[in-house]
Length: 480
Ligand code: 5CA
Ligand code: ZN
Image (cartoon, rainbow, N blue to C red; front, side):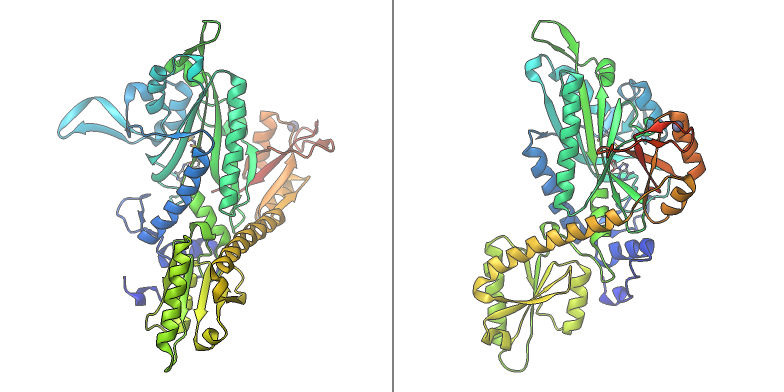
């Protein structure tokens, strides 16, 4: 694409929606011009971010006893229609394949909106005895949901291209509950690696996954104060085991229904990461997911160009050997234009090397997150870059954590909640009765996000609807 097409400036991050859309385009993450609503194209640069992000997800799952597998995209109608609650939750969102060529199919096939009904008929065959448990399998696939709310790249898709779903099977309800806790911990760790702090809460009953006993969720707070659900963990009880007849032989020889969990993350993980860290100049990427981690800019005058270029190549080679992804920008662009370009792409560290730096045996390092300039001795460039990466990652997380904490407002009145959710997340006492929860949502005009998984149970307060005493506070937020 021509450089001239991209010269228009990025809107300031304060105008979040415009900033987000322009950034995806200018930093070459997604192309939204594909002619089907809700379907978008990954550019190679965006796809590299995706690959690096999903490497973290794979690593953390593989190291905690999960195995990756792959199930079919198409689900026969009769399997899909087995679990009543699940059908109710998804039937308006399913795409159906009804023909093979010109022949109507005997059994219509659903494009998976999620894969319970593709995986559990196989689990019925695979699970025989208590010795087979637990099963912990995940897959990373595309899923399809005919979303009727406003679609947005990476945030609300009709083809979710990067759906990581894990499906586990356990002997008892308690074992499954322990797995839910473990999954919340693993997801928190994934987001820690992305520098993204999360809110963790139990969804109210009316907002749980269709077919689940309960749903725990991770949410990020976006720059406009709205929350984005970036991961969910569901305790399925034995609901699906009963409909799909997943039984195991217990140690005492008896046949028992299994208990299950499932948990998912999508490319919303990338939407949150780039939205939370980015700034007015473009992307700011945590080093671990940056497709280019260091860009070297040779500062060239009439004399000494060869020495400078040779030194840049040497630095690149040495960094590459330690696994750092490096580019040298020796193009004809003016230095200012080069800075603009690589800042837009979120490159964590820029190294400038000119004749005077060579005399001093240093490179000038400029951090993308802070703009700080420091000299690094060329003889110590590997360690110098490594330690900057760690500092950048930590700074991104701490900054985001402070911003998140500033956006949580403890309220006692519903009117106050209405006002505060314009800027972030409110908390308010709730007696946990359904009718009070729904009444609150009505007055506020926004939903209850959930009951925080870590409650500060220090005092009794009054439910603003019925006046009953309670130790529970809930998050209320505007959501994506
Ligand atoms: N089977 C379960 C666990 S994998 C399931 O489908 N859960 S879910 O419906 O909550 O989806 C898992 C996660 O995918 C959500 O928490 C959300 O972060 C993400 N997600 C859901 N719908 C979309 C969508 N239309 N576009 C992008 N991401 C989505
Ligand atoms: Zn109440």
